[in-house]
Length: 343
Image 1 (cartoon, rainbow, N blue to C red):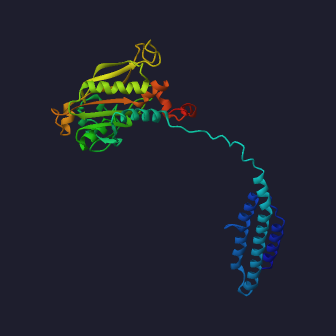
Image 2: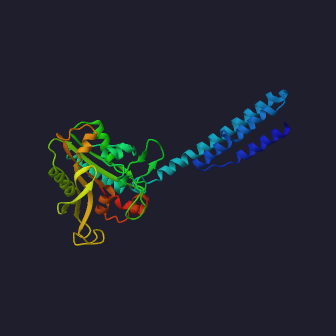
Image 3: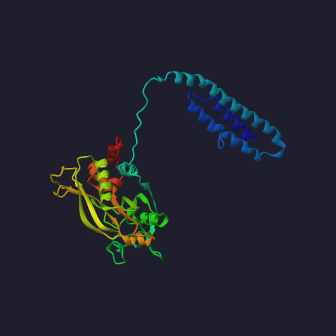
């Protein structure tokens, strides 16, 4: 016990000589001596080692030591009140603050929002669906027979489970779910991420983003489809962009067409982007196949409709002259900060 009392006296001398000239130093003193793992707690723990006949006297010593440490802490706090106030007065609050970098939306998000906004002005609602989809909603309902190339394993990420599940290859699966749950008239756009088993390169990626549209009602014609897409192109790229439709084939539309616009890079004169044709394909479209309507109990003799689908990356490429798809997912700040001023 005598040795412990001597040690407490040494602690008092050590504490008495402590100087703390900043608020941070005062806080360090509190943690070191008064904290839950501090010196005072450790010394108090020695009470269990004191013989019972000396506990009363030693308890008084510990109490005096506790008061000593707390008084020292209070003195240090008081001595720093003035310095803290003077330091605050020395700050010139009229000076401009430190520069904070401004964040922005991702370029794909910017373009996606612009596309959605354009079609919303035409009365299209937004529909969303699961990215992990079953075979029926992704393929079967969309009139894709079992031997269609899109079902091949080299194109689709399948989940090893029975029944078959997969990562959706297009947002047409969302159209399936809308047709399943709603009755005409239907007017929706379906934005979302899709997946295909592609080799990643400057022109292809294993995941990308689509926006598809669907309009079902009485007396809907191909002319309605063309005027809708003409409006979209002019709103997205400007009034001077030329448009053309080319016959194509999609299992879920008949007739089908791909839509080209005059190349924004060369103005239609011919360049590497448009492969010297002056035209760039931006989307696929067509009249909804009667079998697709019948798959969901919709009378194809009464109702008709059109559908279209576009890749957000392609639209973004043309709008911002991005020539490498990998840039969208690499999170390179040098690339992303170029869009700080975008809408």
